[in-house]
Every structure is written in structure tokens, then in C-alpha cells.
Image 1 (cartoon, helix red, strand yellow):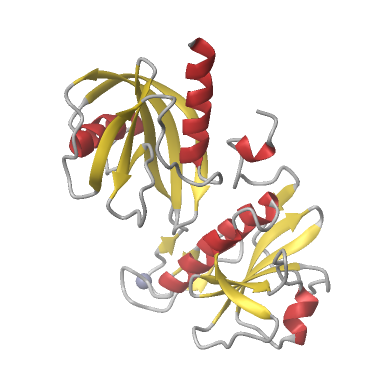
Image 2 (image 1 turned 135 degrees about the vertical axis):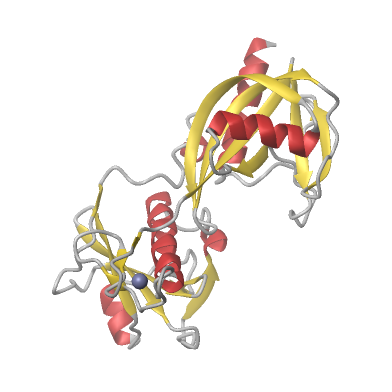
Length: 286
Ligand SMILES: [Zn+2]
């Protein structure tokens, strides 16, 4: 696999990114801005689309709540949250982040995903959850603090497991009800309080498709900013039981052979990387 799109590092933090939280007093004209209106990001209406610089945003007279992200290749990166009524400037589009998959370079996609989580957290933590007072950004870290009671909140990350179960050279893939089309993928689910990631895998596999698995092997993890998941992917081997849809989330589940795979998820997601890597391993063993 020498195609870089097959790397489990997609959407990973670029190596030449230095995170930070303190907004510089002066932003250079070439600073990168990740401008969000609700869950849509501003991109130039060009082929391929590009993200705005500080000078673009100044020309468009757009402003809002600024959050410093850090430096990428020495260039300041800033998330900007504008209000929900902000118009769409001529020559630009408000776009869903998924629509930029494979359209903008992966390092920028990763930083856009990071920025979306910062602005989503900013938008949903404006008041103290303990006493209702308006919160303030802490100057020294990515956190908000209540000036009345002192309560501190940090950005949320929700860990979720993903597991691709194999039985010999067959793959267990499921079609979720929430998928609009016939895409089949590995099983996935959120970690519950008190669970290890391994506990979560055994419970979710049992609840979703009614089987037992063992031989869990870590594959890779991926930040998945919809809105703030950390997907932690594993392989597992079938142990017992008959696979069938057991809850409302699963529309269908089947064992697939390598020469008759169904429609699979897109190449950016870790689910596709997990499936591709497993298929390659099983083929090499065949
Ligand atoms: Zn409070």
C-alpha cells in the first residue's frame, strides 16, 4: 500500500503542527482561517476548493469568535465562529466538512476537523453547567471557566470502538439504518461509563449482532469530528453465536467472502482503512 490515502494516518494531526491556545496580537495576512457557520465551513468556490487566509477574511469583512489553534508549517491557524445568520459571500461557499474529503490536502482536513470541534465546544459551553453563569475562556489552556463558581470545562472527546470481525477468510459487515445507501461497514459504538475499550467491543458486538468474539487486536485510531469522536479500531475473531441484526441501529449483517464484498465506506474513514488492511492480510494468507 504505497497510496498515501490508504494510510491509517488520514485526518491525523500533521507532524509539522504545533498546537497552541494564545491568540497572537497580530495575525499575518497569510494566516489560515477555519471559518465556521454552525456546522459549515467557508471554502472558496474553486476547483479544487481552498480555505481562506486572514487577508481573505478581512476583505470579506467577516469576523466572530476567534480561537487560536496553533502553527502549521510556521503559519498561524485560527478557528473563527461566525453567527448563524452570516451570509454566503460571493465566490465562497458554506460547506459540510465531509464534502471536503479528498478535496483539500489531508493536513488541512485534519486541522479543519480540529477547528470544528473547538467551535462546536465554544458554541455549546457558553454557560456554566453547574450554576448557569456565562463562562469565560481560560487564558492558559483550552478550557472555559465559570467566573461565579469556578467550574472548568474542557472540550469533549467521545471514544468509540470500531471492530472488524473475521471468521476464517470471511468478514462480518453490517449495514446501519442511519446509512442512506447500501454501504456495509465494520461494527462501531460508543464507550459507556465504566467500560474499557475491550468491554465496549464485547458488549456492542453482542448487542448489535448477537455473537461473541475474541483475539482483539488494535489497528489504529482516528479523530472523527462529527461532532467529537475518537474512533479506536480493532480486529477480532469470531467465537460463537449466529450473527443477526439485534437492535434498531443495524438493518442487515452478513458474512462476506473476499471475492464478493459489498459497497464499502469512503476512503477517508478509518472503517475503510481497517477493511482494506484486513482484506489485504487475508488475501496474502490465502
Ligand atoms: Zn458556575
